[in-house]
Amino acid sequence: METQLDILKKKFLLEIENSQSLKELDGLFLQMFGKSGEITLFPKNFSKLEKSELKIISPLFNQTKKTLAEAVRKRRGEVKLADFKKILQEPLGLRKISTDSLEKIKTKKRQGHTHIITQFEEEIIRAFSKLGFAQFDAPQIDSDTYNFELLNIPQDHPARDLWDTLYIETSEEGRVKSEEGENLNPGKLLLRTHTSNAQVRIMEKIKPPFRQMILGRCYRYENTDARHEHTFEQFEIVYVDKGLSMANLLYLSEYFFQAIFGYDVKARLKPKYYPFVEPGAGVDGLCIFCKGKGCKVCGGVGWLELAGAGMIHPTVLKNGGIDPDVYSGIAWGFGLGRMLMVREGIKDVRLFNSGDLRFLNKY
Ligand SMILES: [Zn+2]
Image 1 (cartoon, rainbow, N blue to C red):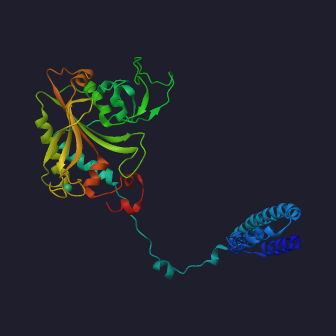
Image 2 (image 1 turned 120 degrees about the vertical axis):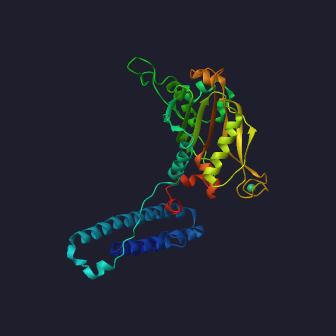
Image 3 (image 1 turned 135 degrees about the horizontal axis):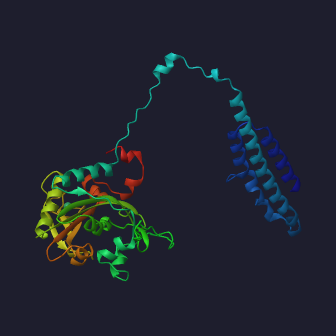
C-alpha cells in the first residue's frame, strides 16, 4: 500500500509541475481532493490493514496530502506570476482596435439621481413650508440631556426602555465647553434616538410663537429585519402658539396625508403614550389600499398607523423656558421609511440603505 501511495504522489506531483494554467490546477485539485478524488478515497482500504501497518501508513498518508496541497499552492503562485509577466511583455499595440469598431462600442449611460428618501424629504419640506414651517437642525450626536432628560424622560424612567440607545464613550476631558465655560455636552453622549432631541433646543433658541420642522437621521441599537433598521430618517414638527389643541393636530395630519398620498385621506387619533407629550396620540390614516374595508396591508383593521403626535408636555415647555399657562405646543412626526413603505408598497425597510441599484433605480 505504501508503494501505491508513492506512485499516486509521484504521478500527481508531475502533473502539478507540468500544469500551465490555474484552470488545470483547479482540475487537478479536484481529482485529488474532490468528493471522489483519488486521495480522498485512498483511506477506504485502510480497514483491511493490520494495526501495525496502519501505524506506518497513516502518518505517511497525511504527509502526502500535505505535500500535494502545498505543491498546488506553490504552482498556482508560479502560474500567476508567469501570466503577469506575459501581460507586461505584451506590446500595447497588440490589441489594436480599428476606429470602425470603436464607434460600434456602445457605452452604457447611467445617470445618477437623488435617493428616494431625499426625494421624499423634499416633498415633505415643500408641504410644510406652505404652512409656514421652517427647518431646524439638531445634532445627530447629542447628549443624554437633550435626547432624554429635558423631554421628561429621566434616567430611571421606564420609558427609556422604549429606545435602545447607542451610547458613545466619552471621558470627562472629552466634553466640549464653549468660550464662556458653558458645558455644551452635559451628560453622556449618544446617537440621537429620535428627532425630538431638537424640541428643547428650538425653545431655547426661538421665542414663541413658532413653527419648526426637523428632518434627519436617527439611530437605535436594533436588530434589523424587514420592519426594523438601526439607522433611519425621522420627520417632526414642533409648533408652539397660544390656544393650540388636538383639533389643530388632526388638521395637520389630514393636510399632510393629502399632500403625500395625493387625495383626501381621513385621519383619526387614538391615545398613545409618549413621555414628552400629554395627551399623546397615534395618528391613523384610513387605509389607502382598501379605503377602510380591511385588507392585508392594514391587517383587516381599515386604518394604518402613520404617525405619532401629541400636545407637548407642560414640563417640556417649562424646560425650554416657555410658560405652559400661556402657550401650548404640538409635536407631530413619523419615520420616513415606514411612510414610504406604505405609499410605495415597499416590503423591506433595509432596502433604503442597501445601495442596491435595482431598488434605487425604480424611484
Ligand atoms: Zn386596508
